[in-house]
Length: 390
Image 1: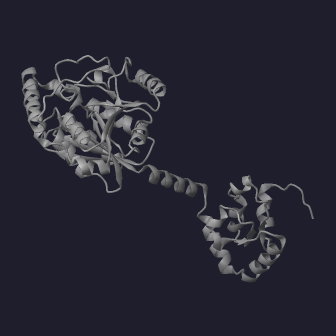
Image 2 (image 1 turned 60 degrees about the vertical axis):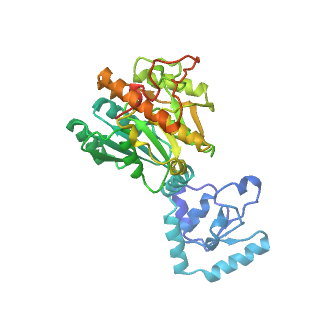
Image 3 (image 1 turned 45 degrees about the vertical axis):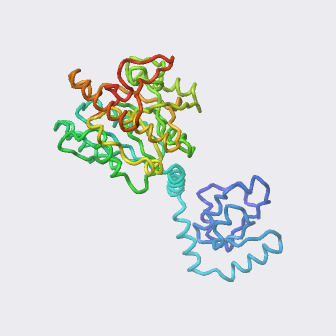
């Protein structure tokens, strides 16, 4: 009997009367690449299934009877009828109940997470409520890649900042806050965050609180870290955000324009990166295995300056490349905390840390070159006020 096309709502009543369901496809390359929806529909009714051995069904050998020829179909139908029982039917229904589109999405989502791994983002916070708010809002809005956690280490900020951070952590399970009663310095605060990362984390990012990230920033940084020779990678930023080769000729008047300018620049420089002598820690990404080799930041640099010079040199001495990715752009406001220092105090810290850096490595520090090969102002890129949050 050929019944013709039937309304979809009527199909379950027909299916309920089936003894055995068939999937008698011809095994062509296209069919071999499909996952037959009717397999799930058949099982949702508790029915035994006889099917050609499609690749997708091979993952579920207990749920169907494979047959390649007409003779095998007859034999397998008879076997399915003989073995059928209410218990077998209930087992098929229970399995099918777990095959919803929502479950399939979760399965794919977990697979993507496993592929990319988890990232831990560490931010040192010190006052500057507007900056940390803009930073965290951009992170939670623009980071769509792998699983990530945000660990904010606050260095004795005002009560207003602490209340804000506690509120964010309460609303957002991916955000954790470590509160210090005093300013422990940039290196010490980062080390506290590094010690608190989750066991599942495979990538670590140190991020300043005066940054605003852009769409796709984390997945692109993680892409560059797939190369085992790359130890440290960071983004480019606007000229006011860096005093070395990471500064690129991008102009915008506000953060609304920044997103458009950043997208245009990174699209034009897709897949481009270059080795850089010093990677400033306004944004620095590394694999967890790299961190195990390099270890924590040197806390003898105190409130800040020269940690990034030190860490970049440690990475190169360990045989890693230190690169700047031209296809990742992050806004860096700059001068978030050091602007609060008197010039004499700032210069004193700069000179003390420079001397310590030179003595530690038995070298003479030289200011980094910019894009055009010229020298920036008489401070190091690490000593640039905006590239450090004590």
